[in-house]
Image 1 (cartoon, rainbow, N blue to C red):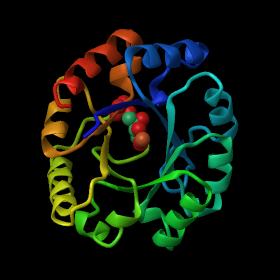
Image 2 (cartoon, rainbow, N blue to C red):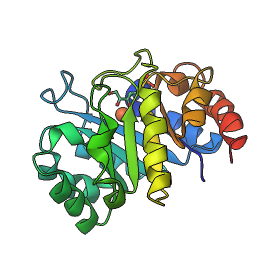
Image 3 (tube, helix red, strand yellow):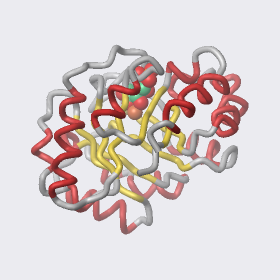
Image 4 (spheres, rainbow, N blue to C red):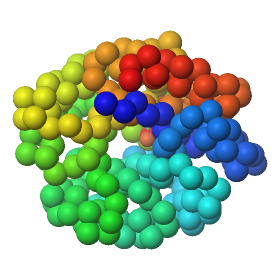
Length: 220
Ligand SMILES: O=C(CO)[C@@H](O)[C@H](O)COP(=O)(O)O
Ligand SMILES: [Fe+2]
């Protein structure tokens, strides 16, 4: 299995965004996590397509778009056009999850499905085969800089078991409150795509990325 770091630019210094992104690429982060918030599905508002389109030109990293928006099917095409390679939508935000996943694939991107901390893993049973990635939120979506909720890692283990039982190889992403001092709990539970915002962008993004990559390499 491949272990990947996906730095969340929500925590970046936007006056230095290009340089900070480059630092994470140099440090070995293959993905870049792009948190889209609509002020409806989550209380906060972040950024959208034009910002993604601009960033796309600044790096070769895979654009990992996390859509925290109501009825994301409405915007899938625009985010893919703006440069998203992976589009992750929330189970809780879709009226028709399967149609949303189909739409992502039709637009030419990989599909991820995400569940919030209070959503049980078994809602995903019929969806595991349809997606390339499952995102288990380790905090309540909406803000960076929160503390990881340890119980969410039990769902990571449960989903990895469900995938193994079904003979499916899929990425499991974790997002929220991940630092170098707790990332191994997520890796041991079965996650292989790690989102980190504050832990990467506060301080030196290059050094922080390298420290994460050292740990991830041990799990390859
Ligand atoms: O989706 C979200 C929050 O809703 C995340 O991607 C955060 O942006 C991660 O930030 P940290 O918890 O790592 O600071
Ligand atoms: Fe996110």
